[in-house]
Length: 311
Length: 274
Image (tube, rainbow over all chains, first blue to last red):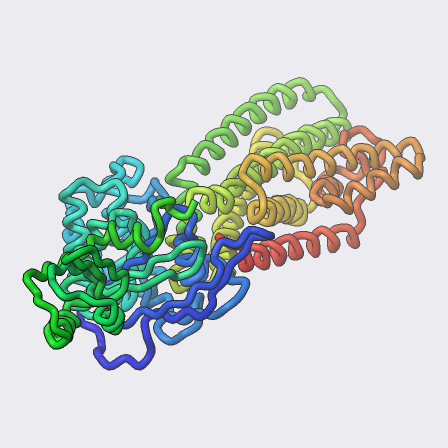
């Protein structure tokens, strides 16, 4: 089922969202915006406030300040939840239910009618590879199977916005690929996915954009490869480099370093490269070599968040 | 709608987790024991005068109903003690509380499911004791319906209090707290009875204060008053003396206490960070 394309409000919008528990500040001031149809990664070190932020967005935790909207409605709005799916970290549920009973229960809680669920539940079980285990009780499921059924319950209502908190936790490589495919399917039908994962490799291959959070604040957001807007380091070998040229480069680049004929700088996207080259040649530089090197998400994470991980 | 889904899940959970079946097995074992004891009592009372026989059988029935009441109290606490704190601790509540259902409906649904279960249990246990009494000896209790309703009310009061404490405390703390309060009520009830028999106003006051803190035992004592033979009570021939009968005002207070516990539980759960 594809979703309507012309949507006025962003999927998620927060302004100065804050949560403190007594004197302890869990989320200092979260300001971010996630567009509809985007696969958005939410990254940060342990204790950065990611889980609390997600809980505030879902109405599980009451903010002590700021504001948040989901699909144009205030976070926690009961009716809006019919359009939202959520896979909690370490999904646990009533272990006396069978897999298909769990999906039926969650479907009913989402207001879905029995005839619709009779079609939807088998297709979901098939999608997560649990059809042979549909009548098994959850207490007999492995950790990976629990994660798969959790994923299925998050998608039972064909949500417009899906929150996935560590969705690949406990999954084998086959399970991780399944999660990636499911996320791509959500994108294909126009849904928004808000992904919290420690596995940066997974985030890198699935997300359109990521936010880096530390001490409950967004430090930076970046587009990732594939969009042509991801940040990269450029190594250049050139002669006749003057301080004036270096100063001029600051229009497009940051973290500029120069040593003899070797230059390196960071550009926000590959789109800036032709202009930089035109500028350099125009300033009389003899350019022998230009090597763009895309930063891995891990490098970017360490650069932005810091190697101490926020401890 | 969401509330009734939760009520159904709660009822099914007890059945699937065998809590209900174990409670019923224990209940039937108790009834079997009670029936056996009553059978021999009936035999030994063959030569007693009709008045004496009727009083002794009524006393026996009251002891049986008292045991049923104790089992019901335990059942009310044990089936509900883990439902909130356990789901909050395990995170299972997250998958439900993010669905389009109000938290008030989640809690009311659980409450309704447990209430239905307790209704079945009280009916089976009190009905079992009085039914056995009638079948084996022809003896009955007075005001069976009123007495059963009061025992049922007592169980709902304990259920509501357990749910309230479950919004704040861990499973173990919750169980200890509610059963501790029930202990206070139990002791207070006996102190009040003793004070009435020995004409000690201070002991009476202690009992009344205990009943205000936790009015569950007052409901049982009123139920006992409604059901037992007036002669038996007046002559202090039964452990459930009529010396100090909880007033209708105390019953109303217990009902308000129950409603307040439920209302505070709903409010606390609504505001709780999960």
